[in-house]
Image 1 (cartoon, rainbow, N blue to C red):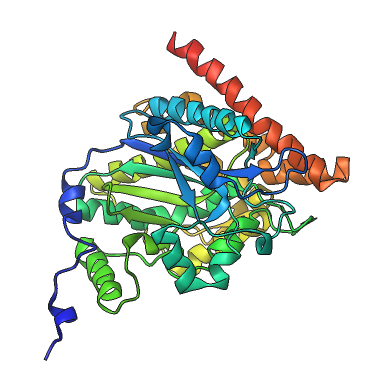
Image 2 (image 1 turned 135 degrees about the vertical axis):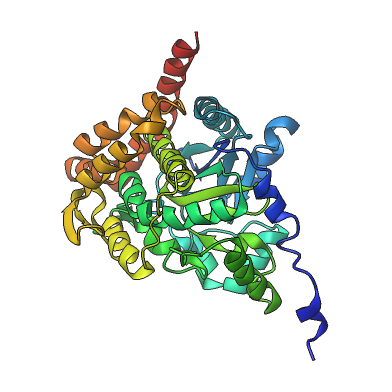
Length: 400
């Protein structure tokens, strides 16, 4: 006989299907995670609670904790256009920097901190993160990482799951473009995205998920996890792309945090373009990719290890091509939605990154030139602010 736990209705799925059925296509939310730093040493400093307490009540609603007390996240509100979300993110970054600096705290972004070490960090005291620490211990303690997340509204539960499954196949390209964590514990790691190795290869229910045939198969898996007490919250499913139960969005979580504001917006715009093009293909009756995880993981490793400098497998042709070519092809495939969604101005930065390098490549070049990890990070901290100021000026000129 089934016990009471087997018979109860799913709490984690209550109202979620309906949320997707009534979702609005291509509404946007963006989340960006910041390092809180001692301004003299640029080491991580555990000042999260101080920063949040000093924010006015309205701005405080946009700030969130992300596991360790030397990190804070800014979350935009939901926007109807990418341009509007971009302005929100840029202003939010600058407002967070100004708030932190009033407290004697500097702010920077890279996928991992280049020299501060995890034993020196503290987990923030919230119910969610107490649960994470209790469940994961060492795995949680060592997760000192910073990322960029995109939320995109997708209407229809089965459609959202189909597009989420298709997005698995382009995660390696998005990661390669965004790789910005080549220095860790004071030395180059020979990885371009050390963040992904630290987080996605360590946390449970993380990285590239299986492909699901539709909402019912996805929901059955969530129900199993809930019924067997594997998870207590839906956000304990830490996949690199996932349906977000609270918002009725697809959340793309693969990308390293970006010091360069233009790079952050380019990466977010390309992720949105991929979701929108997969939606367009789905609606036109074209088959969406559902490649086996073992194939996608081959490209994921190439993105982690070599970023934009390596090669990726073209699954359709069964051969390699340069990663920069794979991203050029991604831009060409998504071209029909660029103007429609107002992404063209933001995507112009992608070819610049392909030709001049992403954050990881710049980190390695500057380390070779300067020979000093702290000097490299000082430049990342300076660009975290200066690039946002530059982009805000550009956005205000366009808006005018």
